[in-house]
Length: 404
Image 1 (tube, rainbow, N blue to C red):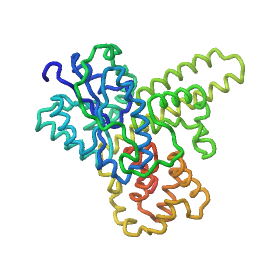
Image 2: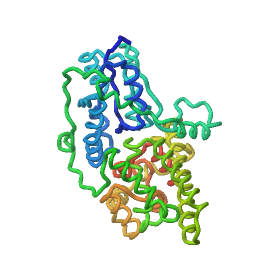
Image 3: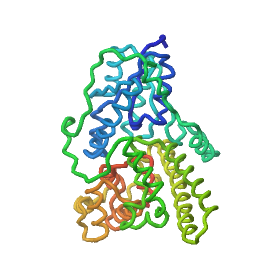
Image 4: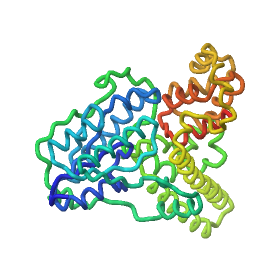
């Protein structure tokens, strides 16, 4: 790489500055040169059946929070609208960057094909494309043996922090560079977002995490199953993990610190009431940490077997439901008007808020599969579109299991 040549950080689902390995690597490799962050509005991504206006609106909030945070580090946010390879090439022509840094992504078939095109382009142009792990998912995993130990090593490792000196003259300002700005639904030709949903952004994510670990988390164990209590008992961190406004490692380490704090408090507790409260915290924190393992465990399944987004895991089931999907039943299920009160209430709540607790998600899928005899693929696309926290690796594995 030419000394002091600009470095491009390609942002995808990692819209934060804290514990951002790609930003740290870019600043380190820039050697005092310029670093800029690129966010691409890609029509093929926005046009996926999994994408919803609520995703765009949440992303817009994330970017409005991210832009000044990057600016304080001396890194400019540049957005472009178009096909990924074409836009990355145009930025290369304009800036002469020779290093592209990004986090690994376990995404949809569309983003997987896009990433392969980018890797091919990088080889052809001589641009070094450095992809770094973001979660516990291991790329090109040969065996699951030792996976859990490796996951814990990643989660317990030191967080990646951009030196604050980078924003105090440590980096060279990027020259004049056109940006499309931060775009919302109207700008991108999408319908308005009408969901009463969670807000996006790293600061919002930190607030949710702090509130959960200091107040709401005590009721996590036992409170997350019921649709009555789950909205507040659940962590509500899933959209922030999906869009990367928090890293998995940040959540793990914060939960571990809280677990140690609770253990110390329990050892010093005097009254039975104190001990009862602290034991509830212990149960809940153990449950939270178990589900953080599950999060990456399911993502690893899609990383290892991308075909499960489209094909039956159980190939003996091929042809069982595909040709028998009744459009009227599917439409009734999608709108929450099947006539089954709990099923319809869950669907209408999802359509209104973009969120549903995991047992009610399973209820919707199993009802669609067994009672309505609908194939999991159209069912899964509808849910993906309305889950604000849509995570492909978790989603498609769960869809296949819950539909049998």
